[in-house]
Amino acid sequence: MKKVIFLVAAIMCSAFIRIQAQSSACGTIADEKTLQQIFAPSSSFNLKLNQVKKYNISGVRNIKKFTELSTSDNFNSNAGVRRVPITAHILRRSNNTGGISKNAIQNAVNQMNIQYAPLNIEFYVCTYNYIKNDSYYNNSFDSSRHPDYISRNNIDDAHSIDKTINIYFVPNSRGVSWSSFPWSDREHIVMWNNHVTGVGTTNVGVLGHEVGHWFGLLHTFETARGRELVNGSNCTTAGDAVCDTPADGRGSHNSSTCTYTDTRRDSNGDRYRPDVDNMMSYYFDCLDDFTNGQEQIVQTTLLNERNDVLDADACEKTLKEDCVSFNPNTISIKNNRIVDGSHSMMSFPNYEEAKKAYNMIKHYGLNQYCFVGRPDPSFTYLLKNGKSPVNTMEGEDCLGFMPSKLYLKKEGSQYLMTDGRSRMFMFPNKAEAEATLAVIKKHGFTKTCYIGRPQASLQYMRKDFQLNYYIPKVIDAPKVIKTPIKLPGQ
Image 1 (spheres, one colour):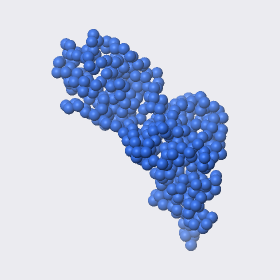
Image 2 (spheres, rainbow, N blue to C red):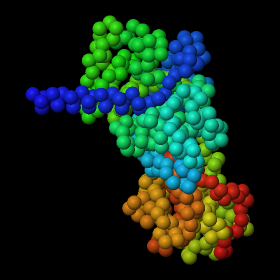
Image 3 (tube, rainbow, N blue to C red):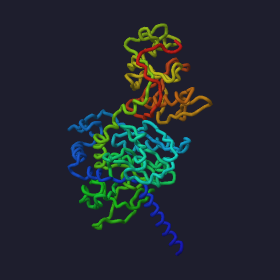
Image 4 (cartoon, rainbow, N blue to C red):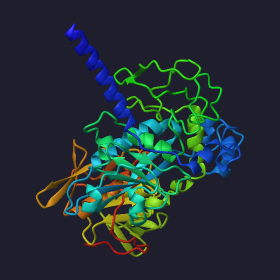
């Protein structure tokens, strides 16, 4: 009998712990301004949402401006993925210790990209900003009500970057993370580090949940305007105001099987049967998808209140590249050199290799020769109008890699770039190594190509068609040079 009692107690304790963990995972609270936008039928948001609802959602996924809405289901079908930059603010101690790692953040962003891929949205870290302050680091970020600690202390005014999602990664928050809404008086997300790393909590995957709030989504169990009934009769005036999300009584669940285990009922006596996979629920470890109604909200805010994050230049302008422009239509071969008028560009040991390089430049229409670390560059690459060469050329000698797998490793006084399998590039210092990594990820290079191996006389980069990768920021990189100059050693 004692064993049975102990077992029942253990089960009840386990359920209590699961519910408690859920209740402390997200501290996002919708203010009245947000609730008015979501629930008032004539609000500016709902007027725009009603316009979006007129079109097939697969078409809406392909546009970047609200004014691009069209009656065609496939309008702008070749627009490509919509990329949203993140500024990751990492709180550290004044002595430069503590704080979450870049790898942990990138892993969370990768997971979020899987969750948002069906919506044709991809996130990338534009820059990592370290905030070194003992007072901030030791503070307990335990209240999400405006103004929160970030706003009260003007941390966001000092550090937030326009046209990006500003996410502050904090070590102490009493188990909660939270987000602003598109209509809030603040513009940031606060993430408890453990919700990103999974250390000390089972509530992983919270980042995508908080970004859902940032796009204007309420919790599926929201009660600010009343609790939604299971029969859906009040779905537009209560709960999350999204009628295709089942009513959610915020009960317990089995995180191993992602099944709802609670027996709670609504005021009509109907039993709740929520979608435990829904991104805006509290059934963590199971969060995976959005309903069509939720996606319509996300797409509406992305095209309106949050549209500035789709400014492609907002992040890329922070990467200053050192490039020499030339005209591919006027280049020629002279004495085993490729020249542009009177300017010598590249030299080769023989005519055959010079001809291969010449044909390659012509094939891709390249018009920029770029460098990292002049006057003795440790890395060079070629572009066409600021973009990577794409696709293939017959007879190319190339090796493939995944930009997301690249990392730097110090070896003595030098820095190695590797994808974990191959030793790719070596650099004389960290600055040039980081600059090169930023260039590779910005342009989405996936191939290193050679002319004249094993002692290559020219190395160039290209990418496969329509691949998109993350763009980290490079600070204090060399300025862009707009006029051709003679290369070092020539």
